[in-house]
Image (cartoon, rainbow, N blue to C red; front, side, top):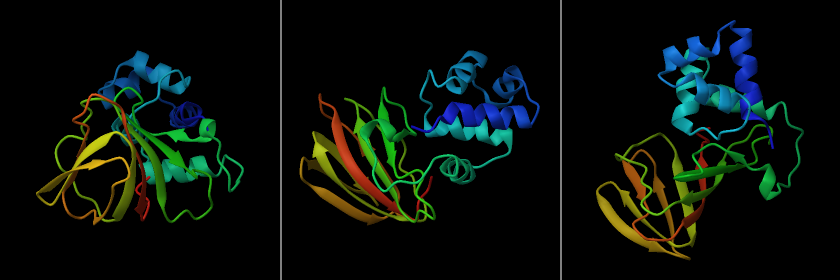
Length: 182
């Protein structure tokens, strides 16, 4: 699996910033940044974004440069999927991080009991997926439905949307977003 932390460390060093400077500017703790850089902690997308803002990079740019450090293969073992979420609440494991000219984001998503993406949000893309375990409440453009194992969805992501696990079990989704947002 590509080392997100090593790449963040490289960016920080190239900009000649200390961990404390990045922590102060990003609003994160120095210990969290240290753990992330040593790949001892899987950062959420929001955490990576906060660090990249300080380092003068974007999520798209970061993942594009990460792709170039990993040899291409059309096959991915579970251990090779890159975590871009938070495994303790909402895990987003990315399939195909090293695919050249990737035009779709494919994720294996895991929502812990009570996990919620928060306020409804929108972005320019289309997304679809299928619940492969548990149940997920999906709100799209003000319409809400609980999707069970085997149910699917597809919508224009410019409509405000939100995912929430209202059950007591982990819920899993395999999803695709185009164009890729990460």
